[in-house]
Length: 366
Image (spheres, rainbow, N blue to C red):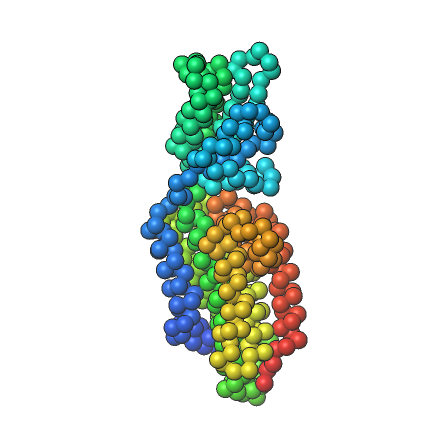
């Protein structure tokens, strides 16, 4: 007589779960088709940012002199700010800000009167050149009598930093990948375990030697494998069709998949909770949307969190999807490793501990 093996039972359950997922139209739509549609739309819209002359004051710039005040009143210049130097440099690298402007007034009697340094990236080089011309025009307007001797008033130094071009797809794809994991983890897990309980499948499992944790683990592994295959498809399409940046190639892909595994585990915890508190199958979508919709809209899926009103940003930064999206973007474009995104990962793990603690309290087997 063959001895019973939980390992064989797990393999059988994983295979059955995978077959069930592949046969589910909703799983394919939410996990792969839906994110791919958004990636295709934004990919075909173009790789760059829209036209604007967004500028910021360099930290340490003299903001009290007359030229600085005049520049602040130029309608074509849109002045923005960032909380610190690192955030300011990041915005310049990614093209959100065309250039930083450093205006310094020289000592009395020293020519030129002002020293202006424009710091821009290669992505915004054309706009930076235009910005330099705009400032030259402003300086000439200040003293039309010496238009041919502008250097007596101001010396404009345009510095171009060579950086990689930050394309729309570099922002959109990690957000869509994160949302794919969120939707699959919440909706997929909630529906599967609710239906298994309602159809007495779980109860029938209790008549077998298979342990309860093997049932949950098998379903989790099956969904994990499916989602990682979907993630590879999404990343591959973005890379080959639209030039999505993978700074370290295959190593970057593998690190992104590791982060995706952590994110999916957290989101599946929400699914376990919903499957337990739902009174009927029709109540699962509304409950799931309470979890997914705010994150879809506020967690940096389509727009940077900085674009939201300041009063809303703390809420955005409290959502687990925000940290998954942030970690994926840092790894893909900035070349960060798993250790470099440890803060994002620790917050995700903290969410996981909280979610599974609640799931353990409310989860029902029958």
